[in-house]
Image (cartoon, rainbow, N blue to C red; front, side, top):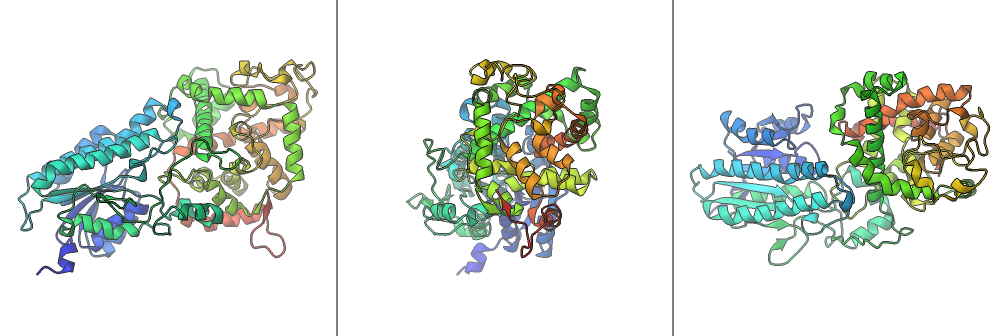
Length: 592
């Protein structure tokens, strides 16, 4: 009689694994090694050796193969390379994937194609090529030739919001798994899929700690707890081993009927597209708009440099910065397409940002304290901007903030500069509190109370703003005088202005840092040359600081993913320097 240990043993087998450097993929790769398999890790580069080292400490062999899931040719070359090196592949685990978010009617072709390439085409290529290799192998004594395990998603069954490419790709993975299983089950190749849902990872820490939100999620989880990466270890070993020989096209989800089986605790989320904005705000949509706005500004700067109309300062910043010089600006989409995706947003912003609204917003800010929390707690709360209807988030908000700070740190900038990069987007917390929509949180900023300048993107969309017809507010100088200084100018209310006032009152950040926070979205001024008549001597110095900061704000989003646990201690020290704790505090509690 075969023992249980023998049924689940992977001794003598080799697994080819994508997406094994962190999270669920890493846990699965380690599980295969713990069960006795050697592991071939497919990575974009060899800089991350953590999984490899842990596998080797287990006494198993591990090797990294570099390949780009987003490149068709790279994926076609992978399996032949592995086989040419003399490896036999007994287990294929497809765990690598990416996410892109846009409203469906604005979803760009490039993002659609990239998501489908990484999440579906690459999976098919590996299944096809490794499957062909397995078919050439003789059946073992148990009638098996190999196992293929694909990672699907809860969105294999649900559509999500603003993630049509991801949902389509993961739906495709589900159907591909069934199709291959139907064809190869008789040949001794098991093809199965696992569909993760809510998993307790770093990106969900803030959501887990939010008692109200966490309780709502837990109510929808049959197992009444969040999943963890380790929850997938037993399941992947089962599907890779001969213990699962009779199971094909099994989906590990929380559906519990004749075809689907529970493997990890998962919440069933049915997104409500008619959510009350004041009750549940779609942070995912806000981030999509914010990213699209940034994209437009990247392309505008790039175009000015390339066509020779940029100032020397812009050339210096965008061409000579050590950080920016390493970026391939060709990866950003064409300017016209990018503008189309944000035109409706800017129309609404330009119609509603009036003097009256800005006076009210500032009065509300001074009259109310919306929350009290530390800087790090604010960063964790910002994580919850990502809507829980999409559990497969690629990067958390904290990781985005750390990307900017780490880029600044690598270039040897002073500590106050690094802290500014870390906190500069925390004003988006405004979305949780007083905002009336996206239009008074994100987007380029501009002065109110004077004529709307032609340097503002889409200047024609101010025609329905009542201030554009006011005899005072529509005059060139309006309520201001030349040389008044930007400190005395009322900029359109949003996350930059909100955070500027908080930091001005509750930190020791220098004037340059405050200018970076307040003006980095004031593109009509620092990039297009508008509103120079307002400037005084101080503003000339602040302009240089803002120009030095902006490349780190725009380009760091495509940088490598930082590890929160490795960086937190360092940045906590900087936070405590510039947001000094008061008596009895270990961290400064900020009034938001």
